[in-house]
Image 1 (cartoon, rainbow, N blue to C red):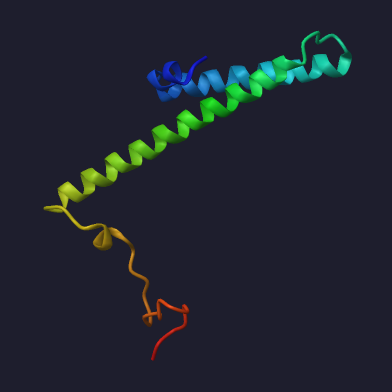
Image 2: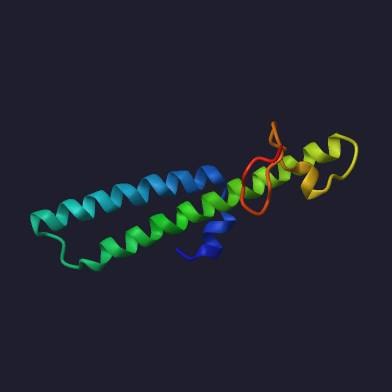
Length: 103
């Protein structure tokens, strides 16, 4: 399956597909051990498909997180700069050059 097709699917569909592909992969590995797997490249194809599905799921998670953080910024009354959105460490400021605490 191509990445374009995977990106069109919803998260639940992708998780179901991931379970199916992993189940197929386990079956192919078992068949290889028994000696009934004629084409060993099927294992490589399934591993690639697992990686593609996981990649798309990760992309969707990142997009959802970005959308939710954008909504939080809009709720707070305005835009914030990237510097304001970063968490500020508590304690003494650090020297940027060597990472040591300044006094």
